Image (cartoon, rainbow, N blue to C red; front, top):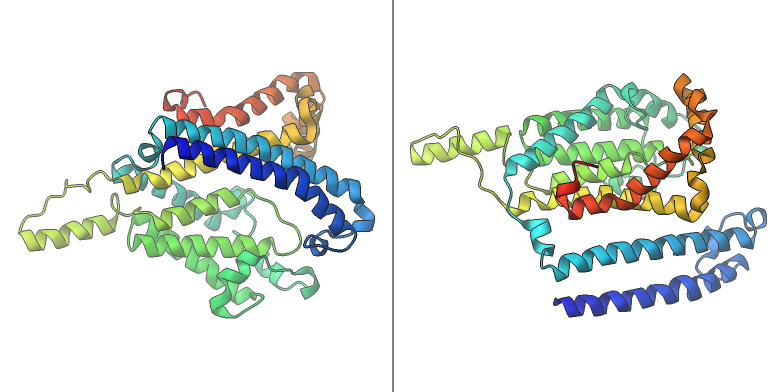
Length: 349
C-alpha cells in the first residue's frame, strides 16, 4: 500500500472512531442503562453505579484511546513514509539474537515456576493453585482464555491433579526450550501451561495484569524460529548435514534472516504500547494531579506497609519529594516509544 493510501486509511479510521466513541457509544450506554441494547448484559449493578459512572468511564476510555490512536497512527505513518516499515520488522539479523531472547525469557519463567516466591506470580505456585481448585464453585468463573486452552480436556474446571500436571508440563517444556531441544514444542508447552495456571488463578473474580505481557512474549517465541541458534536442535541439524556432506563444521551458524527480527520487534512494541497505555491512563484518570506527589505517596505507603518496606513508608511522608519522580515516570511512559523508533537513544531508557 502506498503512503498516500495509508494516510487516507488513517484519516478514515480516525473519523470512524470519532463517530463511534463520541456519538454512538454514549447512546449505547444510555440504552444499556435502561436495560436494552447490546451493553445491557455487561453493565453489572446499574442501580449501585448510576448512569454518570458509566458515562465518565466511557469518556475516559474514549479520550485515552483517541490519543493512543493518534500517537501510534503517527508512528506507523512515519515508518511508512520513510519506507522503513518492512525493514523495521523484517531486516535480516542473526538468529543468535533471537536465541538470547529465548534463553532469557524462558529462564525467567522457569524461575517463577520453580521459585514462585521470588516474585508474586499468580498461578505459578502449584500449591496455592490446588487450594483454589478446592474452593466452592460459586467463587469460580472461568476466563474465556482458560476455557479455550482446556477445551481438549473437556473440563470446565480443572482439579488439583490436572493443575499439577499442567505445572509439570510447563517445567518440562521450559527446560526443553532453555536447552533448545524440540524448541518449538517446548515453548508451546511452556506458554500453554503458564497461561493455564495464571488464567485459572484469575478465574476467581479477581484478576490483575502483570503476567500478560510476559505470557504473550512466550507465545510469540513459540511461533518464531527461536531454536535456529544456541540450541541442541541447531547442533543436531549440523550433525545431520555433516553426515550428508562428510564434513562437520561446529562453528557454522544459521544465516541472518528477517524471520528472527519480527518477534523481537513485536515484543519491543508491546512493551512500548504498554508504557504508553499506562501513561495515558494516568493522564485520563488524574490529569496533572498525578505529578503532585500525593498519588505516588499513597501507593508508596500502601505497598510499604503491606510488604514491610520502611523506605517506602518514609518516602510516603514526603510527597513533595515524590513529585519529580511522578513527573519522570509519566514522561518516561509517554515517550518510551521514541526509543523504539530511534535506537540511538534506547540506552538512555
